[in-house]
Image (cartoon, rainbow, N blue to C red; front, top):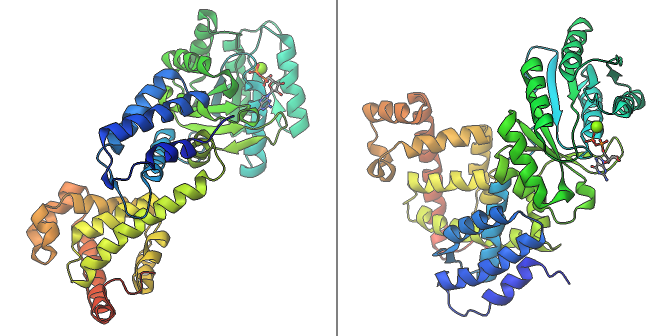
Length: 444
Ligand code: GDP
Ligand code: MG
């Protein structure tokens, strides 16, 4: 029976009594389990190798925090590395171009190109109110063109009238011309696949690419084809400019390994998931969900969340101690910003610190989204160590230098310094009040 990775890791690592840093040997043993779990999840062998190397680098020497077990710590590192490797959450199809925006679909026969073409068209039409034209470039199987036409009728999206005797390139040109004349926003080109990668197919898609200059080229891959999918992805990315991946038949794939392989091999974002034969079987891609599936157990989410909470709480406590001693410097602020980026907002972090309502409001009113936080992080990074420890000493000349070094403006540097000052003052006064109740008061 398939046993969840986290259970296995806990089994191995939690026998270890020692606290402190994870040793090379502990991690080595854990990595054997990680490797096995990834292979069971159908991750390509070469990807498993580079992935476990990455996890090892992060894990060896990592402090095992008081509140989690070594097993939880490694599971957390594996989970975070999976999420990092899987890439960004919900990367949308890019339609920012002069209409009609051409989107080309490529992939093997049977991977789900035609179905996905129609699913995407439906979504663009219904959710984004786009006028979409679909065209089948499959000249090898007449049934393929009819399949698309019938799907088009079903979802209420136009298809290019079928004209026999034209080459794929000719059809592509005709589709784009029809798109222009008909005032369409998007033209979707459904190319012909083959049962396996061959030169004829590659030449064909490369020619269509030259003729149609697609704004997006989406590679459609069947997640059930496992190891093979990697070779397919490599062939296509070598010949055309793939801008994103759609993984289909995710509904039949309980393991999720294909996503990791695809992302690692192509370096392209996974944009969508096909989750059924029906036209509404299309979902956005969420790295953390796939990571949980790969880790292979239901309670992994809560386990990882628990570990993350404890880890954040411990770091939070260390910062809280410094605050109360009036030693909250820009390094600490930088650490907080990092955490905010990690947990996607300040809610989680601030919630753990005592009496942080005001600071929370201050940050919220400063409109702290990821972009802002990243810029602030850059400002702090452009400072010298001495400056980070002695923010009061940062004069006009230093501000200008920091602004230049971080690609921001002196005003932004000022704003950050002001925010830090505000937080530090508030914390100092809070610290005074809490000092009487012991340093950890309020940190339940
Ligand atoms: P193409 O040759 O690449 O154009 O593949 P098709 O779009 O014709 O799809 C081949 C088969 O896979 C059809 O029977 C589809 O209904 C089915 N299919 C496509 N996408 C999915 C999916 O996400 N889940 C499931 N279960 N079936 C799918
Ligand atoms: Mg097809």
